[in-house]
Image: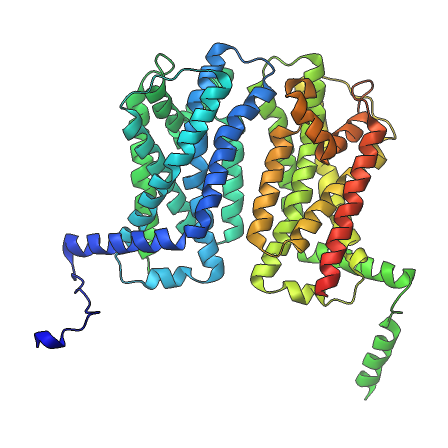
Length: 263
Length: 266
């Protein structure tokens, strides 16, 4: 019998339990990474445009940039670079699948839906790091701001990009019309770039707007990243971590629920 | 028999000459109707989005730069309407064409017996219908927000017409000449980004490096802003005639490129 063992013999896929989930997760991770190959350069371009590009652009809008404002702009840059990948590009990628008709094919793959969602979310969590780092370096050079990078940068980057990817997965799976997905993406970019205290001190914004943003993810993303890059610019980071964690769990749960629903 | 004869008769009555101004005008009117009907849900939405983005920009600039000079306030009042028009011309057309391509309706639209130039001009007309009301609201919001007074002159009419034409044709050319919808979307998004912050439209050019301003003089966005601002203010901008020439060159070049791409496919 052993002589008959074919070279392409399939490893039996575990039918249940953690092993099955993990095997599905790893296979979906490979599937996602391979199918997003041509999409990756675009992600990097978007990150650099909205990260480094916005950091420089804000300087044009504000004719003179005092040192404190420069510190805010520079430490806000990674959040600017991070948010569009999860919040906008990921839903767009899912919407593209819906348009191309491959969405249902991916649904039919024999992996747990939660493993599929987790694979997409973790891929998009890792993908954003190079673009955010380059954007931060460009902004720091442009404004001559020295950074105080603490080890907290690791959890800060991981949690913020995971939050963005989870919310993006929720939008991508939850919204049926790709046109609406694109509209939501543009609205988010607009609101974050002009109406969220990411690159500017919150004192510049109306109090009600800041209070609203304390509950939304974008401002909190900026806070945890800024806290890991500077000294004395933000206080009360724990609250922001908690709110981001809540958004992440809600986003993943919603995306998982939508994706596993029978239609 | 009666019904058949009636159908024949109406067909004969509708038959148009294959060339000449009346054929062109008929095609133009038909395409305007076609666009308005197929956009009947999206046209009001597009106007609403235009107003939101324009007015949103006005108030957003007020948040980012709370201490504007009188000159800066004039730029922040007049700029957002121009950026919103650029956004419309560069995004809406390519977006619709990309959708047609992805849905497989693109070739169908190309088979319509309408001169290409009439179809292009019809699209420009629809863009004006959506964009101009929104531009008026945006400028009014700027006047309220920054408390500046504008001096509107008759120059505003040719400025808006030529500026919107140049931008719409640029979007039209990108949509038709670039075969991959994804590439078109990427290019137009980058151009919108440039119009928003790397062209001195919402702020004076003195706030930008000199070399960047010089590059912008050759691109269509700054010239469009210059001619429109010349129609809204007095003594704020110079080099209006050169801007008209640059805009006209972009308009003709883009229109030629789009018509060539369409002709080749047709």
